[in-house]
Image 1 (cartoon, rainbow, N blue to C red):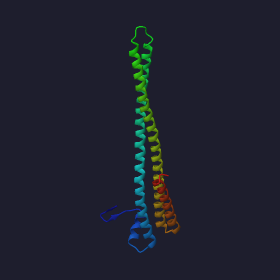
Image 2 (image 1 turned 90 degrees about the vertical axis):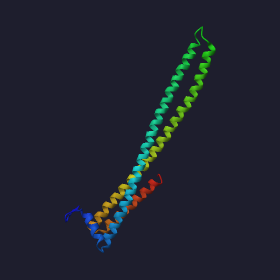
Image 3 (image 1 turned 180 degrees about the vertical axis):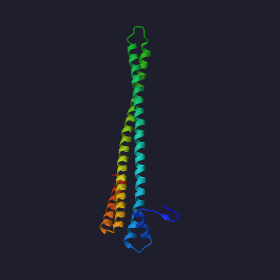
Image 4 (image 1 turned 30 degrees about the horizontal axis):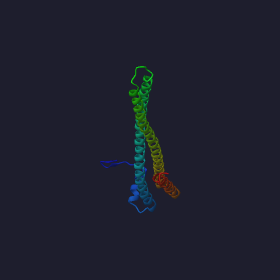
Length: 189
């Protein structure tokens, strides 16, 4: 924070700023790698958010299709009730038999079509739920990759402050692991 000659920043910011204005190879390398990891982390965060939204939209579509299937089954049941009433009407002595037989046949035909529609909606629900689960799994992979990159950035900051080479290499290793996880996410594994 700067203002009227007063400047306050964190230790990592201080080290990065000094690394940019010095010939310290260790600090310069860490600063560049931190910037690269932050950029990669932003991209991974975007992908994670996109797949999470996709999973939610697919789950929402599955719920809509499930409701539509339920509506079709209710319609099927109503047609069955009407068919049953027409069949009962045939038991009456003074009824127009041909009229009710025609209604029974019509209800049977209508029911078959409604049944096909309901079953199609149910199949679509299964497909959408599978797609949602796959997108959610991919989202988790992106989130895991992002977490690894964030840990790598933290380790890089500690390496910069402590000037420990082993922390620098650990940071790079964790970043590489994050990229490996991101590759799994990209491949839908």
